[in-house]
Image (cartoon, rainbow, N blue to C red; front, side, top):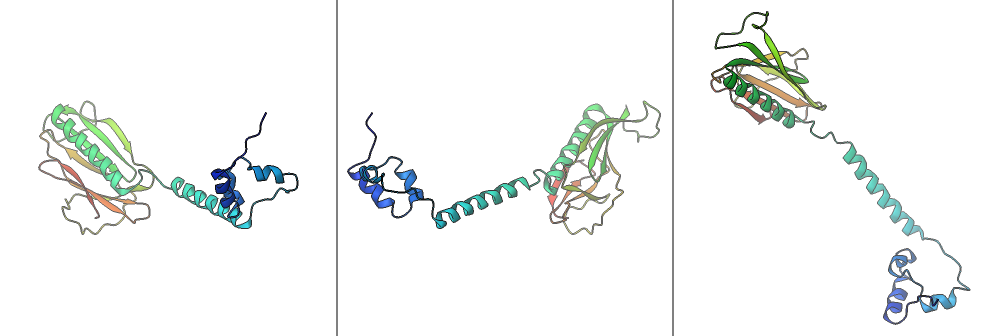
Length: 215
């Protein structure tokens, strides 16, 4: 079987690239040239140069740094995403209150929001603890790690500028009436580094909920 060699223009290109770097010429000229074949008997095998090895090490270091940076991120764990999650729970509570004609309650704690439904229909303010005059569990929404509720206020802070301190024993309830209104309030959310903050505003008259950046 005749061996495959390079001649003509291809030989000129390979000869031009080999003095620059034997490492990269390996990819440009994978087949031996006629001159290589003639000299193979007296040429000794040579390794990579120091510069080539340093380039390879640098590329590996960069790729490792990128991998560590990507794996170190906490996806979905930020104040904005938790605020959006809270808005979804509040909107669900309002919709259920209007459609079922029953009071709905969103119990807000630092790491979760729990949705409750009153056992009886009507506009009468819930009172009692014996079912059917009692609160029934609907769902529990756990917040992702990396963000939490800092505090809740019964005041609706439409504009930013509220002075907020951490309430580690937080257990605040926002009720939604069958007519769509609510007891209202503002939920303050932050990430664990307290670098980014957000708030959820729940209006009294309409029961509407909106997420806003900063406190």
